[in-house]
Image: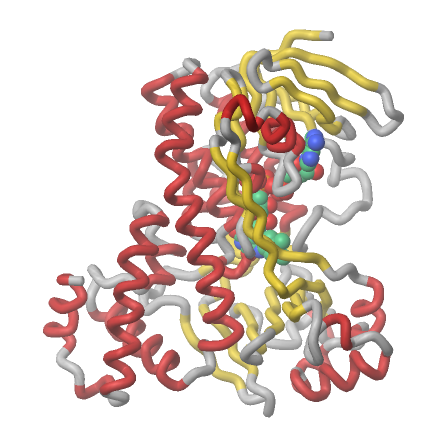
Amino acid sequence: MSNHKIVVIGAGLCGSLLAIRLKQRGFDVELFEKRPDMRKAKISAGRSINLALSNRGLKALKMIGLEEKARKITIPMRGRMLHDREGELFFSPYSGREGDYINSISRGQLNSLLYDEAEKLGININFNMGCVDSDPDSGWLTFEDENGKMTKIVAEAVFGADGAGSAIRKAAMERSNLIRFNFSQDFLTHGYKELSIPPGPNQSFRIEKNALHIWPRKTFMMIGLPNPDATFTMTLFLPFEGKDGFDAIRSDEDVFNYFKKWFPDAIPHMPNLIEEYHDNPTSSLGTIRCFPWQTGKRTLLIGDAAHAIVPFYGQGMNCAFEDVVVLDKIMDQTGSDWERTFSQFQRVRKPDADAIADLAIDNFLEMRDRVADPVFMQKRKLEMELEKNFPEYYSKYSMVTFLDEMRYSEALKKGRKQDEFLLELCRREPDIQKLNFSELLNELGRL
Ligand SMILES: Cc1cc2nc3c(=O)[nH]c(=O)nc-3n(C[C@H](O)[C@H](O)[C@H](O)COP(=O)(O)OP(=O)(O)OC[C@H]3O[C@@H](n4cnc5c(N)ncnc54)[C@H](O)[C@@H]3O)c2cc1C
């Protein structure tokens, strides 16, 4: 047994960034991670090889002084490159503003960057130490290492940053009578499988480098994000069941025929398709909501442990990072009064976590179904014109992705109203040149 001041459970993206910030604030902090050190062991960094990093996440990285280092390992993605069934391409920018784009980053590289910084600051990262039991009030924690050896510690404050399957959350559920702990988990009927596009000749990118590629097919889709080694990580999102679902695609022939039918232009770029389809797991996707996040006097859930969302807005990590920015601001007032800090954090942050969870589901429908719809495409063109010409206008996507000062809950409210209004307008008037933009802007302002 030993005494620790602040303990962060889970050295994933959120936990590592949080530990760094706490250390920078002068706390004695220690990290515990169930998996081995990804910088040494040849293991997959976890779900999804690369991620879209945008302004909210960059703001958190800036707060800890790592924005520039992180930017060096990103690839800017300036818009969506849509692939239709004939292989025709259509590029749809993310924003009408030049400087607004999202960034592809390797989960492993980003996590390693955070580990290096944490260690530089003197934070001890205990790898291969899975938390198996915790008491949220007293701060007692039990860990099991890879050999089954148990260790007990007590902490002044505990942060459960142990992801969607959180052990700290499970401990809270066991005392749900005591704290009226609410929990819901909603799975999509769709799952995902990761595939890849290798580099072309002389390490060239086989498809456009600075875009997020989408093959939208109404009820399912495939997406591709670029990596610095000229590969693309492809993610196939399909229903688990039904004629176009994972269950129906079993043999080598099924895989080939499926791709030939739905994604023919991708086949020449995916020489390992059949092997990867069989070898790579099919994983599920869901939204986890729970409350309270303050599960005892000394314990707080944060990041995916508190609010896991489906990945279609590319905001899960960005939101988890923003959690730390919000917490940090609260700590300016509350300091090391953990009960006050945790209670204020959950009160302020919960509406925003709920909002981004809903927005992420909206975007799933948009990406697989609406991006190729002519009215939707017209609306995007109109939004680009508005963003180019009127600095005060932000589309819903831009509010969520680029306006890091705006709360997710506000982006949802404002963005949905705007979307409805503009879609209706584009249905009525397909020629956007005929619109009076300053009148339109006034109307949008009144929504
Ligand atoms: C397919 C897919 C694509 C995604 N794409 C994006 C994207 O483009 N952009 C984006 O912003 N987000 C994306 N996300 C979401 C993003 O991955 C998560 O929101 C983010 O990883 C959350 O960070 P976290 O630190 O809270 O949790 P995690 O990253 O899951 O980290 C939790 C850590 O805790 C450790 N742990 C677990 N249990 C224990 C235990 N008992 N004891 C000790 N340690 C433990 C785990 O090993 C892990 O290291 C995507 C997710 C998926 C599934």
